[in-house]
Image: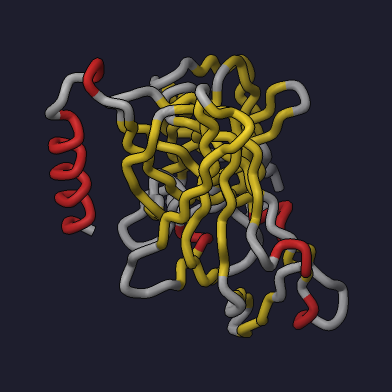
Amino acid sequence: MKKIHILAFLLFSLFSCAGTEERSDALLNIFIVDAPADIDELWVEVLGVDVQISNPSNEDAPATIFLPYEAGIQFVDITQLIAGQEVLVGRSAVDVGVLTKITLRLGNENYLRKDGLRINLELPEANKSGLEIDTNFELRPGISHDIYIDFDLLRSLKAPEEPLESYEFNPKLSAFSKINTGEISGSIRPVPQDAFLYAIQQNDTVTTGVNLRGNGQGQFLFRGLEGIYTIYIIPKNDDYLADTIPTVIVQPQITTPLGNITLRPKEE
C-alpha cells in the first residue's frame, strides 16, 4: 500500500508541474468503496474500468478509455472497503471534458463467504459486459479528480430462503466525486458491537458499516454526502437499542464528526 501512495504522490507532483492554464488534461483516479451486507466476505474479480469523457468541442463522439486494474491480485473483498478503506481501480491523465459514464468490468469468478461456506455468484447476463454508472462530473485542467464507485452490497445481494447456495447477485452501484461531496465520521461504542448505519435525506439513503477488523475500533465513515441528513443506527446485537441522530449537516470537502456513539442496552 505504501508503494501505491508513493507512486500516486510522484505522479501527482509531475502532473502539477505545469500551470493549469498550460494544460489540456486532468488526472483521473477511480476508487471502489462499499456499503455493508450481512455476510462475512464478498470477493469480486476486478479487471478495470471504462471511463467515457465528452469533450465540449466534440460532444457527439465521446472518448472511451479503459483503465486496467493493475494490482498483482485481481480479487478484492468488497466487505472490507468501509471506514475509509478503498481500492484504486484505475488512474490516468485524460483530456478535460465531462465524465459521462463509468463502466466497472468484473471477471467471472465472484463469490461470497457466509457461516464458513463459499457461495459462487453469477452476474446477470446484462451485467457481464460491464456495470454501467451514468455520471456528470466536470474534469478541469491540471486538477487531480477522485471519483468513487459505491458498491452497495445491501441492495446487490438477495438472500434465499432455501437453499443457501442460491444467492442472487445483482450489483447496485453509484458514483460520487470527492470535490462535490463531504463525509460523516464517528465510532460505535462499546467495542466490538457492530451495526448497520443509514444516512437518509428525503428519498436518498446511504449506508455504511463499522470497522472491527484488524485494528478497527468501531469507526464508521459515510462518504458522498451533501446537505442535511438523519442518521439511523441499527445494532446487529438485539440486546441493544436502535438510535437516531437528526439534523446532521454535511458540506463539500468537509468531514462532519459525530464522535463516539454509545449504544444503549435494552432493559430486561
